[in-house]
Image (cartoon, rainbow, N blue to C red; front, side, top):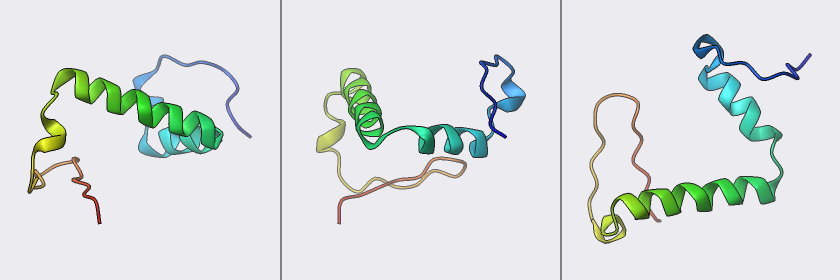
Length: 67
């Protein structure tokens, strides 16, 4: 049974809960989120797209690259 309420409890912000929320979005909503995140990143660092050879940092950060 899904939680159909808003919670402000940090304990409920598990990766699994975030995954379930993201999977509940339509493909259009997911793409809107991707565009929003991309715009946010580019507004903070306009040269980030020009950077090459990103290296992973120990912890929870995952480096993605174009194939």
